[in-house]
Amino acid sequence: MKMNFVTDFFTKTIKRKLITVSILLLSIPLIVLGIISYQKSSSSLDEIGKTNLRNSVEQTLELIDALNDQVKNGSLPLEDAQERVKIAILGEKQADGTRPINDSIYLGENGYLFIADSKGTVVAHPSVEGNNSWDSEDIHGNKYAQEYIEKGLNGGGFTYYFYPLPQNEDAIEEKVTYSEAYPEWDWIVVSSTYLSDFNEPADEILTLNMIVIGVSLIIGILIIWLFTNQLTNPIRKVTDHMLHIGDGDLTLEQLHITANDETGKLANGINELQRKLKEIIQNISIASQSLSGHSEELTQSANEVQVGTDQIAKAMEEIAAGTESQAHHASSLSNTMGTYVESIDEANENGLKIYQSSNEVLKLTDDGSQLMSQSVKQMSNIDQLVQDSVSKVQQLATQSNEISKLVTVISDVAEQTNLLALNAAIEAARAGEQGKGFAVVADEVRKLAEQAANSVSEITEIVDNIQTDTSEVVHSLQSGYIEVEKGTKQITTTGETFEKINDAVKTVVTNAQTVRDNLTMIKSTSVEMNTSIEEIASISQESAASVEQTSASAQQTSSSMEEVASSSDELSKLAEELNALIRRFQT
Image 1: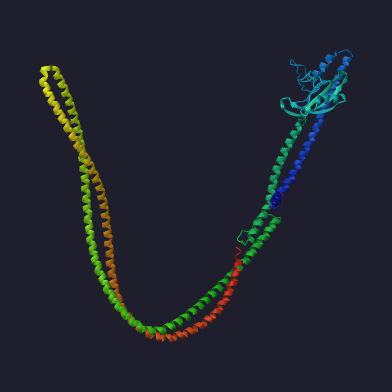
Image 2: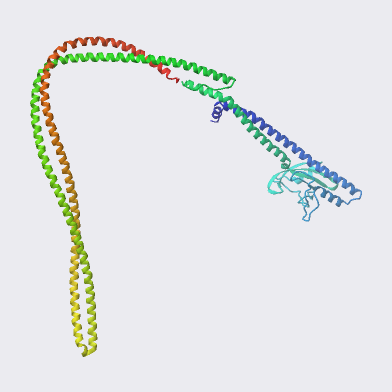
């Protein structure tokens, strides 16, 4: 699949091939040059860095040697001489036991000098002075302190190990040291730095190379793009133009390529080819169309003549046979026409009867329509009466409700009167003899109140019965009202149906009159036809002889037209084949 993609990519277009090859020719040398320059600069910087480390150690040893001479001649104590060396390569010792890194001795961003003895004790160091590093290991288990001490005692050498960065202890990078011993003081002078400090300028060179390569590629691709467009656009136009011509399209505008190179000459040649080919095709097309038209006209004319002669021959034969039998049937047709006239008379009489019956039906439908109109009016009156009855019964129900309310009030008054009479009797009994007369009156009042209460109960029962009956009457009247409305609608619909029937009957009467009139006309026409048929019989006998002679001539003409039609068909087929070939070209 991958191989097919590569093959398709490189065989697609000339433009793509040119762009791809040009970009490869431009980018590969730039990339190779960048890689080589980075490797060379990195290697050179490594050597420079190593030389710098060695020089710093040797300069320190020279300083130690000079101070040691002063110690030997007694002008400087050993401790002071050693402290001067420490201050010279690092700086004065701080209160916390650390020493600053001397900026005048540049060994990279994180590079510095330090001193250890042959047993691994750090004599001078920016941060771990006084510690013993003999057993110190890096992440790979290398005891780097023992290695740089051993190389220092053996005349000097470089040691590589991995160590955390000062500003980020989680980041571990490869470190390089150069160590050399000063036996008289039992010191191992060590200069150390990270390889990344050596390669930092190389990284800058790499970045610069990448920028240069990127800019060069962009400019190169732009130039390649413009050049390939200028080179391939005319070729593409020529290719597209030739594809259209190959498909038979000669209506294209001529190519406009102003280049003076091979593409311009190719375009001019194609334009000339298109022009001449268009002229040839147009001339052939005109001749072919003319030939096709004439052959079609000839074929059509021959076919029409042949068809006409065949039809004439057949018609003559049929006419001959018809004229022979026409005279035979003329007499029988005359007899038939007599019977036909009698049938027309009978149909005319039946049409008159239908017309009379239709008028009678029309009269009956008119009467029925009037009766239906009266029924509709009566149903409307009944509808109004039922509505009035419902309204009055509803008023009666309302009045019975009012009576029920008044009876309730009277019942309440009777109860209160009875209660007052009882209270009066109690008070009269308390008054003794003086209240006897009042007690008699109170007892009568109580009896009257009881009678009134009993009457009120009877009235209440009667009123309830009236309300119940009234509700039933209202319900019945409402149901009747609904049925009356349905009946009114049904009668109205029936009336409309009667009107439609009336209209239909009127149409029947009109049609019956029309039929009667037509039958009268047919009767008079039939008499005239009978006379004409007798005349046709004599003429048909005379026509039979002439028709036989004409039929023989038509048969001879038909055989000649068959030969002409066959030849014109062959010519038409050849013209169509030529037109089919010409139609492939659009001019």
